[in-house]
Image (cartoon, rainbow, N blue to C red):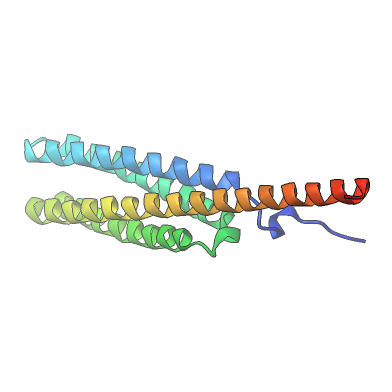
Length: 169
């Protein structure tokens, strides 16, 4: 009795790619909210700023979950250096989240300057991590396309070989 599990084979993992794209978009939206929050804080609208930063942080955390799920799904293309870039970006996002949370805590503890500084540092880390992830995703997509073309070429050759065999070339 054979148990065929398709995910054991090196096939295109569309779900993983889609999760990563969705995560990237959520994190990008989160970055925009965090920036808006910082602008509010700099205009002395602390409450609105904190709300916007929290909203952005929630988007970033949701996006991180999508990235992690997507990275698990593209395990079979791990020969590609893009997967490593994505995993590095995920680690950097986790660190950026810690930094932004620390900044929020500082702001809520009346240490606005330290808080803004920590949030700005976290934002820079987020943007760098997102750049690594996009670069990694492009590498993974390139590797998948290369594999798809290689398989298609091989199947064309097999088809030609079988046609020759059937017709006695």
